[in-house]
Each structure stands twice: as structure tokens, then as C-alpha cells.
Image (cartoon, rainbow, N blue to C red; front, side):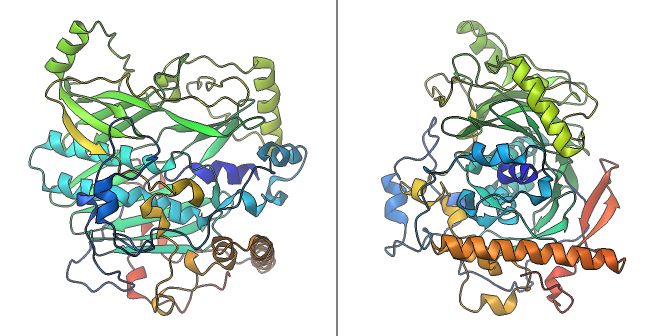
Length: 529
């Protein structure tokens, strides 16, 4: 369904607030044996986007057992199915004139992860938040929080399979004692689909909720995140909030799918008044700006303190403003256009041309409104630019040689390369490979709603496509029957682990963790599988 497509790539969005803290001495259940942390992972070279080969340093540091890594397994049980005989457009065109909730995407388009597990991938570079909490300079702290926000998007690259839609009440827990955090996600609403999450450590909390919306642009689909994400640095009593940028999936009708992320990301520290404003650029005419990001850190008076630049797929650097200005003059570069603070919109991403005829845009946007009740893409506010589309079936290449190299720059983050065999396993990162692993004894500790217990996902992971499809249909029908039962008896669904509140900073409706999950009393959990 179209709503499913909106969920299938975007890993995180809005935020909520919570007062809970993680006790470092508190025993965590479902533990994994500690292994070298992410701080010791070998970064990719600047310009690496896929990690086509695993560097010798990383390869030699992996365990001799090819199926075990720094944390959990390094491969899935079987490689993914080929999608060459399937067309996403052949599914989309069936949506015309039909109820979206009744359109089911074939399981061949799925990856063996739930959307809740995709959300947990935001935490792959959690060590950046530990470094931020330990930093004494507020500018250093907002630099590192910005690096975390950018790094959380990096796993999206070439992840074009759809995660499973979470069932209402579905949960996922991730406990990482080796890097010092634990996380809970819950599907708190089905119509509209909303996923809430909360991660905590002795240094930080990360919390938010995801409610993506979509818009047709002819040969592409644009996904817009809603709400705010919040990071709390506990040693400083600071909260950082931001909204994520847009994502566009290209070549929906013809050719190989690819996507880009673009728009303005503004990260605001409520206590210090510092703002990190990053522009995620669109590909442009010659695609030299594909995946590129540029921006500044501002103080309360809107004076520029740092220049930030890099690629969300690869790295992020910070440079002194004086060094940046001298570099731009010396190399005859045009300074990047930065929209006024507080005007975060995809219109600030740059004016990349669109090749899809406007008549087709109008027709498909009209179709989208008719399918969704007119709620998507009609919200008031600045109009988004028409996303850049290439010739039919064309896939752009990012020119890694077109890079700034400003003296005295500080490297804030660099991506960990994916294994050379990643394309055989849904282009998963090493972090993602282990998310659905069920270790011995874990099932006894988990609630019956945990993603790892989903039979359709487990069968797809094992290579049983027919079994996965049958189980997926069974679970969806079971969910529909449960919804009918609640409606008949006028029962109101209440999430188990999150509650609806007014956000402390956004003053909007948000989902707050209720701190009860880690008591591990799961007797009231529903039977959803």
C-alpha cells in the first residue's frame, strides 16, 4: 500500500520527552557478550558509498567464524531473493481507485526486518553521543550531535527493500551493553501508523516518534517526515531537537530504484541557543551535489561559528569560519545559499531541475489526493521543489572527487564500510545483520510482541518466500479481526509502554516512554502473532 511505501525507507522522525534515566549498574536482560565497540570500527575512505570491499584492517579484525562479528552475526541465514521478475510500478498502478488499506505489497519486496528494527539502526553510531556528553565545549557538543543526526541516515543508502509494517502493539528491544545503551520501540497507532521509540544510557536519551507522509512526483515518490526527534545529554541538562529531511525514491515506473535525501535540517539546543543548520543537497544537473551536505553552526545572535560539510553517506567535517571563507575565495567557490533560520523546508535544498512533465505531476498528485483523502501533500506552508528525476532507468553517480578540503577541518564522523557481500543480504550494514538474531534463551526474556517472534519475517529470513507470504497474510487478517472486535465492543487501544503528552519543546502531541518496560511484566501484552 502507499502508506507502506512511505514507511519503508524512512527510519525516524518526530520526538517525545521522557524523564527516565538508565542506571549503569542495573542488570540488563537479553544481554550480548561485549565485543569491541563502534569506536574501534574502521571508517571508509571519503567518497565511499557502498563499501564495495572490506578494508584489510576490518576484515582481519573480524572473528574467524564468518558468521560472528563485533556484535552478533555478520550474515543472514540465506541470501535475498532476486527481484528481477517483479515491478514495483505493477503494484502501484493497482492502487488506482482502491482502498489503500486493502492493497498488500508482495513479500518479495520486503527485507527481513520490521520498521521498528529499522528505527533502531539510528543508534549504530551512538558513541558520538557519548563523546558529546563528555565534551566541555558547547560548540563541540552540537557538532557531535549533528554528526549523530547525519550518521543515522547513512544506513538508508541502497536499502530499497521494504521493512515489514509493524502490527499495532508490536515492540522491539535492543540492549547493547558493549556500547552502553538500551532501546524500546512500540507501534502505538495503526491509523495513522505511528512508531514511538526511546533509547537511554548513562550519558544520553534519544526519543521520538515516526509518522511519514508521501507525495507522488510522476516517476518518483517523496517521503516527508513529521514531528521532532530529541537527544538529551544528561551531564549538561541539554536537549537538542530537529526534524528530518525529505527522502525521494526515483525510477518507480522504469529502471532501477535509487533515492536521495534533501532539505534543511535544523538542530537546536534549547539551553545554549546554538543552532546547527545543514542543507542536504539535491543531485543537480550533473549530479555533483548528490548526497552532499553543507551548513553552519550559529549562536543566539545568528553569527556563524563553524562551517559543516560532507556527505550523509560518508562523512561530516567541521571547519573554522575564517578558514572556510579563505578557502572559498582562494578556490573561487560560490558560498552555499543558506536559508534563514527557522525556515526548514525542502525548498531550501537547492533548485535542482525536474525532468518529469508537470502535467504528469498534476495528474499523479490528483490521484494521490483521491487515494488518501486529500491529506497528503496538501498541508499549508512553503511548497517543495519538484524532485530531480533522471532519464528513464538512469542511476546517478556521486562524484567523490568534487569535495571540499578545508585546512584545519575536524573529522566528526566517517561511515563504517559495509561488507563486500552486503548486496546479497539486502545491502544490510553489519549492525543491521544482527538485529533480528534470536540468541539462545532470549525468547524467554522477550515480550510476546517483539519483532523477532514474527513468523512471516522469520520465514523470509530463512528463504521460505511462500511461507512468509502466507504468514504475512494471516497476521494482517488477524489484525483486521482484532480491530473489528475493538470497534464492536467500543474498546480503545492503549499502548503499553508509551503515553500521549504535550512536548516540552515542540508543544505538540508526542509519545513519552512510561519507564515500565524494563520491569519485564509482560502479562498484559496482546497476542498479535
